Image (cartoon, rainbow, N blue to C red; front, side, top):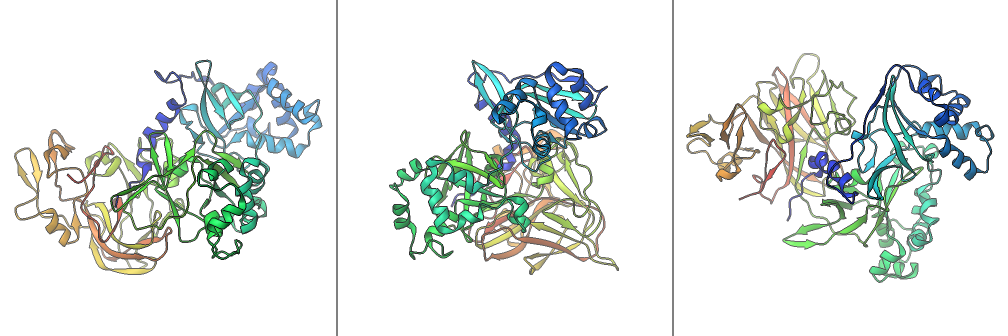
Length: 588
């Protein structure tokens, strides 16, 4: 079975490449000049140019937003020109902004405003890192017009003047008014005749109602947003399905599509992913849960192509179904939907290896200096998928991380896992998606003398082995210009003890990686950077789960974690290896 690696490891490089893919002449990047006018704030800047922005200034006055935008803060504002607002008024059948309802204008302002400072350097092919003040996200992209690359905003406007820095943020000038979606996913999908078969299937299964609830009317905050992978009539025709009746005949095994046990219900549910997932969110995770409770879709980025369920099992490659990138990222009030280029159906899933960087946290990925500089310190509750009992946590990157063999030159540093009179300290992680099955769990860490004895539990079930975070591997031996396994020690003998080297290195010389304090020296073995086997877990349901570490005997000093490996128990536990530069070394 093919091992799968989190695509997020390459996100920085991929994001840079994606913009070029939309350019006919991709010989050079598009450069934008930053205009600096830090002596005024947003409101004052707009008033200084009434010929371009008087109408938006008037809207700010009507909605009482001009006071906020003239005060201290950190905002990004997408400002439509007077010509853009005049075109919007004509569309609405209005002669002036005063004729529009105040609530409508307030929503308009909130959709053009982000409480964050985001320059075009942070634009990618997808949603911006922070939602607008009305709760919906803005997406950016690029298109080629007459041989010139133009940045697009929400597929509704072209960026006319970027990156105007003022005292309280950034202004981007756009040529059209941005319009937030007011329709639900169900309404948008059913309103398009190209999706009539899929739409009827939504209604017949009752899943239309699930997708037809506005966020403000959804009492369960975990169900406010969904993502739908829609198959058009033309795509379904590729599978020999030309009507809803043919779809029902093929998939409904009970004759009652509204039953959650019916195969048609599960088929449609398999096209719905809980949560708000724009294209970068889709391809940066190896798999996603669906509303077919026991089934996940897997994702893969191949060049610029996003594939669903492109997998290899038992040496047999199963071709995936492509997402139509240019037609996707369609925002609804309660989610987003993407358009498939090819049909796909439920597949029986088998366990696959997940090599998870613990630094892959939503709040950390949003940092403007992600993989470039250390984060501020986080307190318990600051990270949605990690919690701990005491002290603050920090994301550490090179040059500090470069002293150690850690994947992508970054790690999470926790306060000591120690016991004391008041309470034993602990760390709790929400895991990535794990397919139902049995896995061996390896904790990859840096031994620096911090911590002590740690016991790992999975969904509350304690694993039998206590991990000693203060123990080094057998002493290293210098052979020529390489560090190597000591006499009598092999990868297999270490594995039998529940230990393994996880970084680059030998046994083949070409896989050796530079030793951090001597560029002429390479290393394939180092006693203080390795992984400990926590035990074997039984994943009873395909989902995300809780992995917890509890201190069980005394230690002091910070502890550093790099990765956690979840490897099916019948697969190779020693390969692949992971290098600080982000490369992955397959088994020779």
